[in-house]
Image (cartoon, rainbow, N blue to C red; front, side, top):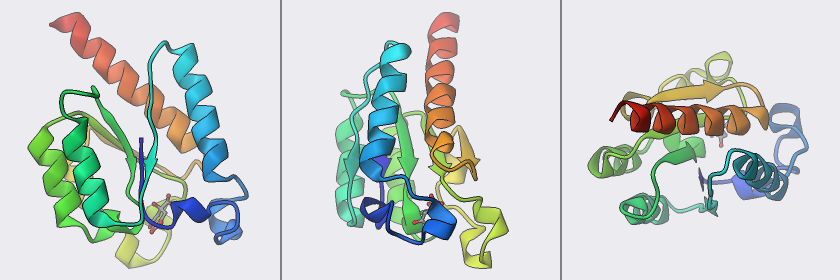
Length: 145
Ligand code: DQA
């Protein structure tokens, strides 16, 4: 699970848009859900583009897939997009807010074209839905191999 910039401030950051849930609580809920699904999840948060790029590279050979909320880098980072394309791991993109209901600069995602899919607008539930989508994808793939 990769959390991008400013998501460390969830809970206090623009609560009208992102709600009152903290990043720690999101990670806690994800761990609980992962346990139920018998998978492991390891969360990383960074405000730095290069750290996110490194984390994507390091996932190779270590993790089977990536759940990512790249925050504002969603709309700006060709480097994050290229890192995902380079490792070729299945990625699910998630957003708390519905990025298409917001400012026009949020309507484009560099990640969408290299992700399996995107879940946007369900608050904390976007992460849980994203985890289910990723695990479902991985299990379906395994079954057909
Ligand atoms: C976000 C949406 C982005 O546009 C924004 O820059 C964020 C959070 C979301 O989860 O809704 O930091 O990714």
